[in-house]
Length: 334
Length: 256
Image 1 (spheres, rainbow over the protein chains, first blue to last red):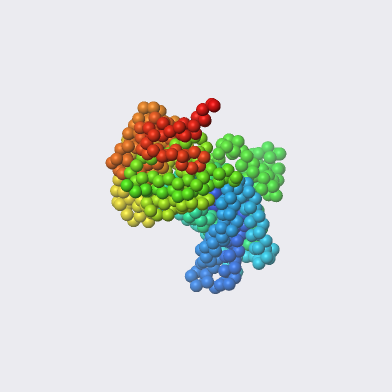
Image 2 (image 1 turned 120 degrees about the horizontal axis):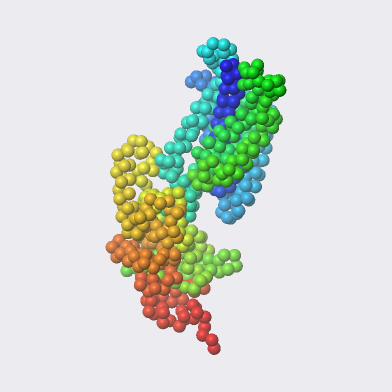
């Protein structure tokens, strides 16, 4: 049973953590794609920017959280979301909108977003330095050890405070997004525009508004994902940049342009990663006596070493695309 | 009668190619005006300019006395200037009926709070919109495919759906871009009848681009002939058909 708890800690919880972050990131990428039809490579650094804003605000007002009783970074999150949304709309106005007005090919937009990502990363480095910083400036990171009431189980289930917030915020974001897209005027207009932009405009939908709304949502979600990631580990200027590829893998696996697909894709990629690096030998330990010797003696039975974790999303990506070329959910429109 | 659409000295070039050349024309309120001309005459370009899908280079367009030059299509929609597309557009993931039901603007069900706080109103309104959409879908003869995904309809059926779309709001002017292309002959008769009925009973003004001369002859008065980006002649269909200039523009000059 101790082995099973170990499995829960290392696969179930870790997979949910990675999956949630990938899912929120991938939803932003997929929404941008469905409206503007290009892969937004600067998304990772928009996430970092959101986390950086939280860090900045938390450093400025480290006591704010104590008054209410929740960690300061979470109080600052809505402000950081707003600031990141403003940044996203600003970037669009300054860089992408002029290109769109010229009717450039999507690949030009992709390269432009690559330029934006380098620029953002440089700016964040300039102000935040290159080292890691904890977002818990003045608070203490709680770690909950939950012992299981089963005889013989000594290992507790370990979950940290930021992980609980992560799960809760992911759930809230997903539900809010669902209601926004299915029930609100703007959400429906977004779906119409992703299906057929010319007809949407001829049906009285202001496409400039929809583009701006898309950036606001994508920026807000990016800030959530970046902040939750930095809470779980520490803030670093290149933190989310390295998540960019798994996030794109998640968006593509789920079906590009499909937000529910992106959520599913995020969890598929997250769990695939943790399952692949998990040492399965641990689960076999209780049966050591009845196993053939070569299997019982094997030290590490992980599919791939931790160093090769980044390979996993792409293996999944290729495998799923061969099986279903449009992703798990049929992608393209919201 | 007064001009509801007034195109004044419009010019438009794509690169070095001058497509619309000092074009001026009026569409009278309550008329079904035909717009014909040989390929490359600039009909569709002019249509797109009026409908707000393309910016013009110089000139002015008035709609009901108001300057609408370079206004985006969504604003024109709210003013009652609607268009159909030459290549039919549809929301492919919605059914034919849903495509019509989404057209009326500002429905209560589109408001996140109203769906929770005023479910009765939302239901009532949706039932009303559905009733109207069903009427329209009967009107354009698509009743049997109303629950099919619009993306799966045939080209001709999509064209009829386009016409239906324009009937879901209180349009003043509808720009019909080759509505007959790809629609079979029997349906075409209904279509002409329906357009006439909309014009007579609902007071819609139509501006029609059409290659099908039969349809132009049955439907349109007056007819405007466009050639090389400007108006060549305007008159009744008989006048047009007997005009030597028009014959030359369509068939080339008679061999000397």
